Image (cartoon, rainbow, N blue to C red):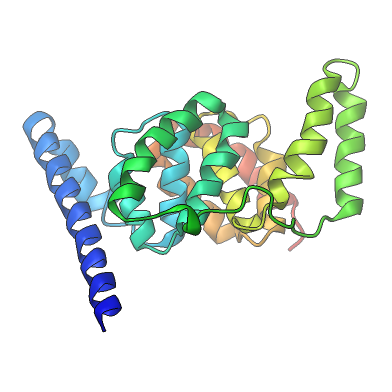
Length: 246
């Protein structure tokens, strides 16, 4: 019974912290841009209520180096079912796609949230867990294609793309392949890096993301990544949707 009481108390503290952070955010917005506060309540915060939306939001904030609001949205994500292991993997994954500096800035903010919620090493991923199964045929085809395109340009990048990204990072088991794809697609859109979006969106849909869910990602990211970035991504998404088997 004492353990149950402690868990309940910690949950209440977490919820209280989220409410306090939201109150401060709203006070700051009303003091500077009251119309922004209205849009936030009517269109943004009111829609961020599911685990997937939390993942998309976190990916966008990390991608854009926007750590000011990260504690609020991280607490919300943890309350929405994103586990500490999953968020730890999101940081690690995005270090490769956005650079180490963005990842380290996220670590600096995250450690305080984890400490406040008593999240310790026992709730984080193993350093070298047993990998997920690899689709050898698909990976061989991808590696061959990339080597033919860029093997004479930057052989080190080609090697690390195969050995580290797709034969290691993407096979880490504490972030499901669908969610790993969701994070990647969200980060690419949020930063306007659409050159690889077609390949990663196809991979996301192969991993279980539906067309309807992909459309919602675009809509959600209009608020967190900006309309221009989303409009740059929409022609590519349209092409992917039209070319996929019905």
